[in-house]
Length: 258
Image (cartoon, rainbow, N blue to C red; front, side, top):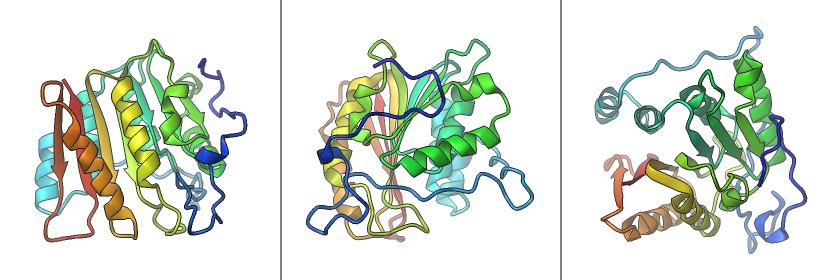
C-alpha cells in the first residue's frame, strides 16, 4: 500500500470485525482500544519537553532500583537498536509520545526514516498529529510520520512490502485516565504480533509493554508470553522484564530477531 503524502491519513471504512464502537456490548468487546484526546500544549502554550535520554545500562539499573519506569527502559533499548533512516512501526500510537520518540530516532537529513503510526481511534490519530505539529518544528521531519486509523493487526496493509522494519512497538492495555473498560484484547494483539514478526528485518526488535492491572490484562500477557515462547531459538531471542513484588506493574517483553 502506497503511503499518503500527508501526515494525517484517512482510510476507507473498516471491516466491522476489526472495529467496534466504544459502547460495544460486553459479549462483543472492542478489538482495539481507543485513546483520549491529548492537549497539544500546556497552559503556557509550550509543548512539554522530552525526557532526557540515557543508555540501556543506566535505564536497567534505574529500573532495578525503582528509579526508572519500564517505558524508559523500552525507549533506551529502542535507541540502541534503531538507526537513522530506519523504518519503524508504532502499533498503538495513542497520544503520540512514543511516535515522537521514534521519529527522533529515525529522522535523518536525507529524509529516509519512516514512522508508521497506527491506532483504531480517529481521535487518537488526530491527537498524535496535533502533538507532532506542536512538538516538531521541521515540516520535512513531520512528513516522515504516516498515521493510519486502523487496528494494529492490519499493519501489513500499511507498511510497504519493500520497506524492512527495524522496530515494532506495542503499548497494551487501557489509556490511564481514559475508559478502563476499553482495552486491547488478546485476539487482535496476537494477530498483530504475528504480522510484526513477518515485517521485521533481521536485527530488528518487537517491543511489547503490557499493562496487567485491569480485567483482561493478564489474559493478554499470557498471549504475548505464549507467542514469545513459541518463537524459534535459532532466529529469535525473547526476554521479559518484570517486577515480581509489584504484581500489577507493567511487564516489558522484548523480542529480537537475529
